[in-house]
Length: 270
Length: 270
Image 1: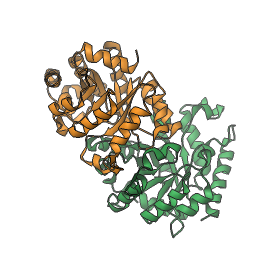
Image 2: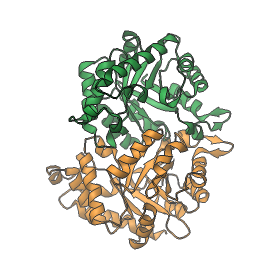
Image 3: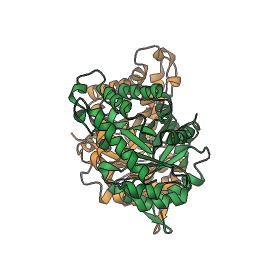
Image 4: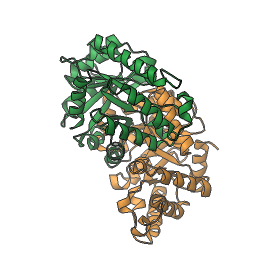
């Protein structure tokens, strides 16, 4: 099953638009886990095993691994998901982008080395730099459009003929870059009005929506503005708000509770 | 010595604006090296030891390592340069970019884990996502402006009030993002007219210039349009054209000859 089929199947079977971001931070990992071999993987395993029935996807952010040489923990984490929960897609959040020959290497990193189902990419360098990812048609390619941070406006809100850059990217993505029907866009929950605009431009193309929780995005507004006609079309990510919900030996109880609460809150507004 | 001082000192002492891109490809590495332990590092070591007096910088592209789990080869390569040629700055080409908390992790990856002197970054997400890099004031931050690939025009040439995006980025970089005087910009040699425009906007800010050689950029036009008043201000990169110049046991002879030829050609037009 390709990424898009996997995601659509999962939205239904888990009745969930929730994605848990696996952004581990050694300083926040419970003490008893820090003493183990591969502590980052062990921490993630606890999170995954206690939330697997509540999510539509997992999203490890690669910087939290590569900063500390924890490539092996990332590999183990993705293997654990594929082996035990094969119907849950894994999105590698890496925001890659480079000229063609190099982009091919990044595609190998995400899809072959780590066996991710989808990867996030940056559109600044243009369509030919996205092609090596998009051409892997069984995989998902999630293009930055309107990001969740305050500085998003610096470049993404620049206007050309009364059309802002993020709207131009949304148009290019839906008209020109979706030839394999494997595109998604990143749109931050912190900008609900822009979420509605982008939904209107791209039809049913799914959106990856960060910015809920620690970053302050409103769940109700995000869901109402981003949902498709069939009440899906969103992968709503929370990382810190879920994975660091607890800190003791029983951290997975708090993690599960936080994931359940957010999953249900999202479903309330669908 | 911080990155910018190191680079300026090196321009003078080596009389060179040439940067050699360390983008190894197992299929193109000479056979006798493929059989060694850490073949990617051994290949790079041959390139470095035969070109060290000819370059102002080395630039490993991280995707060529991370695609194949060769993090250790990258570490060994950068250590080899720092230990044996401590006056040559190392630029990690990674084109990173993410929200603040994650950007901090990418800065740790480049500057603390790999001990690079500078890193390339992507401006799409805005100024607040560049700050965690720029705040490391002893390090260099090299921001994508006008890239060397054909698709660069897709986003970078969009016009707002008669000002193209790459010109807006050049303006932001020189006016707002250079508070630590540690910024450079990426401008492809394949677009010499834009190189001249950007030089006019940013004053003496150094430019990293890819696109010579395999990508077809013209050396004379690039140098004439990108040089500063004191005949420096450029880090002109060539990767494939130099590192794969030879293929036998004596590949380093061909590598040295290619580097020498390009270094001298650049100097001819300064």
